Image 1 (cartoon, one colour):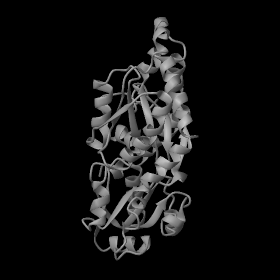
Image 2 (cartoon, rainbow, N blue to C red; image 1 turned 30 degrees about the vertical axis):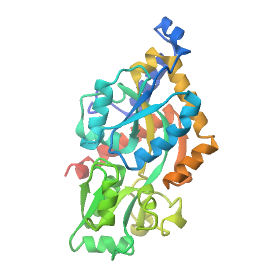
Image 3 (cartoon, rainbow, N blue to C red; image 1 turned 180 degrees about the vertical axis):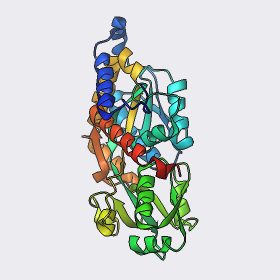
Image 4 (cartoon, rainbow, N blue to C red; image 1 turned 45 degrees about the horizontal axis):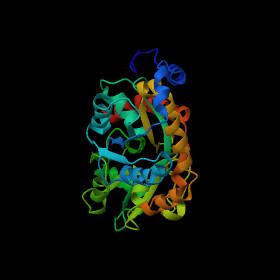
Amino acid sequence: MSAKDPLFTRRTFLKGTAASIALGSVSTFPFENLFAADFPERTIDIVVPTGAGGGADRNLRAFISVWKKYLQTEFEPGFFKGAGGQVGYETYLGKREPDCYNLLYGNMGPETIMYVLQKPNYKFPGDYVYFNRCDVDPSVIWVRKDSPFQTIEELVEEGKKRSITLSCSRLPHPASIGSLSLADATGANFNLIPYGGGNPPVVACLTGEVDASALPMANPISTKGQARVLGVFAPSNPIPDRTDNAPAINDVFGTDIPDLPSARAFALHTEAIEKYPERYELLKSTMRKVFDDPDYKVAIEKTGRPWEFISFADEAECMEYAANMMELAKKYESLLTA
């Protein structure tokens, strides 16, 4: 059954995922238990399906700097940007062994949207499972501090007169859905320009290469005062004191655009879960300890990311979020592929 199949529903998505995980809880490989106590014996590699230097890079390094205390090993991130994340996922699923020594650290929102729009050759759900969410980051529209646009209303009004350019990390992204939905609802003309993740979309906005930017909230915050947030695609602004008291966009325009956060999480081959359930349990249990470690808060704050965004979720909640994003991608597919 594929994501295009009319019988593919959120219920079957979650049911299939639960079955896969349950299957992994009863090992069909009885001799694997002999080796679980020795795991890990070497460095764990982490595929990141975006560019180096951005929020994913900073957040991942903060997490693994603490996680290594509990798992007693080193980690080696590798960055594989391109095609909205598809390059990284194909690298992970096609070229990395399903042995729990290879993980993926992805942004579930944009990369699930990418899956729906680009229809790659791997299967989701099926080939991998998201199992440890690290954060939730609202999508926003923002400008550089010296921009002539002081409010989201001014930006929209100018967009009714000319094309407004907005940098984004990739077109399949919650922030892109929000921006295009806002333009569609108000009659503004927004031209989204994807920069492939990492720091380039932030730099493009700060240097005036584009008029504005549509990204997760942590990106303008990371500029240390060089940005002004105009509006938030969320029911409310979680940190108004650090984001110019930016309003919820729905409150300003009376629109009904859905809540559109990004959420980064680790993922693992389903085959690895089935073959090595003890390794999987060790990964999960040691990861959970990171969130209660004071050193993690220190590491996050050094990145400039608000601690308020840090939010653990297990595999069930992660996969529910992914299912919701798949539904949104299908709903807004015409805007994202126009």
